[in-house]
Figure (cartoon, helix red, strand yellow):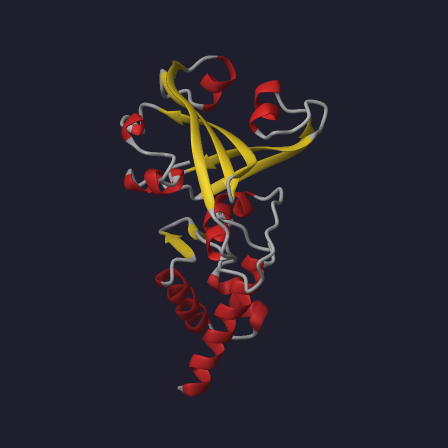
Length: 220
């Protein structure tokens, strides 16, 4: 029994390390119990116990018929902050900043309800309107990111009542049972709009990382 416990704990540690080092990101689907059992040379019950323990700790979330997905990244022992192209880094960044002793804050620059048109309508064909939110994220009161978010109003009808300066967007989505199960991200290097450059206190000719995220709930 002691050896069995040690094996599933070792598997937990291995999976956490993969999350920390970016092999698994928030929204990524883990390998199946069968695949992991074969990969690590252990039985499926050991894998199941490790995944169950990780879910109890809040690092993964299992969905019947879909699999197990990364929900949260474990804290790293280092104070180093890396802003990468992956969705996991961005989604967990504010929390990670606070865990490392830095002060994280957000300012809501604008929040309005608009008709869903053009490309936005293609992304959200089931809603007639979207909430459009512009937020400025800061580390120790210094700006580091501008986030423009489109929220389908049909699903998140009371978003205008939520305090997105203090609260997390993903925590709010979870109140509607719509926490993202999958996230697609696309990275490019580009010149920001003049308004964003000003918010970031950046020269207008200085390029930045621009990342587009598409988040899907478990219904797709």
